[in-house]
Image (cartoon, rainbow, N blue to C red; front, side, top):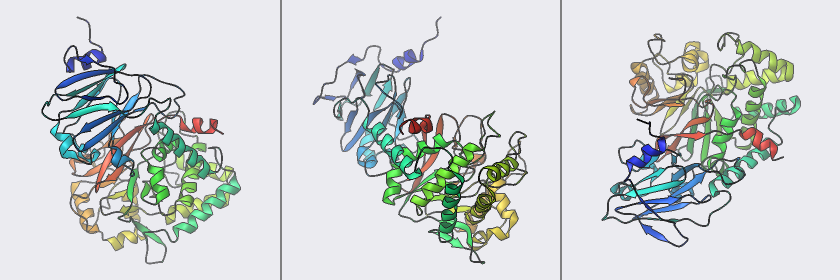
Length: 475
């Protein structure tokens, strides 16, 4: 017996012979009770109407696509929500099926009228050369039409390109490490900003303390360890109207430490990419001082004990910074590490790099955390308890931490630092601790984030391209 292809498995999900139609402009097809196969032609967007709920299914070939590329991903979104700012979406890749189902976690945040969406049994499959739309509920009207003319480049791609070009303008030139004088001047300005950073509480000595409190009127974008993957950061900045929101003051980018020190084999000793990603973060901080925040991780240091697979990255980082930027820049980085917060507190979440303090705390103790080395160590180095890491924190530690901060017992607590497998980027309810999540944003090929939508922290994953190369080629 021959093994079925992935396309064959998708077709078996539907009736053997769905009706094939060619959808024309201004034509609207009633889908209810029918199954329609629509051949792909160019970068065409599709409009799906379900009562009050409208959705757009838009091709997403990637920023670097120069001409029509098939098959490519599609993204499904609510245009009313997406055009007003950062919004939830779902991705449809070749060989997969996307279904609307109230049992799918976080899917309700996709819709402005979830009741109308969930009353249907809508699904769409992508078999490479066509899309197969299905809604077996015949008594409800579900309609499919074309959303505008076929384009050489989709609107979503054009918007991402525009955002990336604005990032290049903010950086001030090609994406390469800044000359030492410019880098030192930039860092000096950033450190001056940190002295009076919005929401950053002062400790008992009058210095920036351990807690940064996020305003209620901004949409948070939480980013885990980047480990010098500049393309991952560029992806986040250009996706989902993130940069637009930062420019409007409605979105806050929060990096949970460890932006430096590459992880991929063969690159562990390369510190140039670490210089570049910090240069980009600092330039973004200068442009958006109230909308870019950085908490400290264990790699944000020159400690010689910082190792990765036997490579002394803390020592190499110190040597490279001194040789390429000089003593003044090294001192500026140390000041940045001292002044940056350990914890972000929000109405909708709490977040730090590694884990909770494993002793009773209060908000004031955490503001004064730099006076307590054990607290700093827990929040930058610790991991959830596992068989391989028996000294890690537990559910009771997280419960005590939430209580000390006077937040609800189900307030999401989000950290980075500890990848729970070798290939994922997001992990939910880690250690069987309810609403305790891990995000690692340094994976090759895709990057995970948490985004605040409807008062909830919603996980999202984006594919990553070679955006640094593409951007520098535009100059």
